[in-house]
Length: 182
Image (cartoon, rainbow, N blue to C red; front, side, top):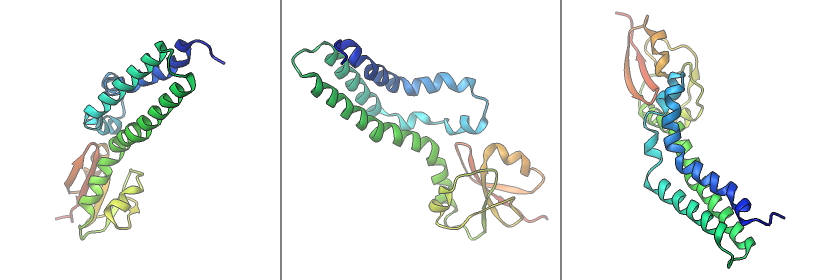
């Protein structure tokens, strides 16, 4: 029932502009975050928002702005194309980028733990997908000497009383071997 092309295409245009600006908005928000784990996850967030991200959302925004002005293409077709573009952008770019930021450190730690002979435990971290990547069962508990723990990097100070060595660290997720007491 909306008669104005401007008001009809303004919401998707704003959404495309927001998604285009998302990597830069994360840069603006990071200094105001106080959770060290979230900050560590966002360390290399630009890797997940590459040239394809920018090109897609620039083109989507331009198409939306064009549809605001165009009278030749029927309104229903324009809405269909914008809806299709939005679905492709969200499913093909936004969700994989968010998953990459959130899951790539867990995946890398799981792959690093895959062939370790020690028992691997998860401590102060709740990421069940680690077990899938590591291809092994993982208990959730405090690590004991002779075991390997996957945990958050900011939890490492709680293990200061135990001799340990870091086996793998990426974006706030670490694998640490708890050494036997000398």
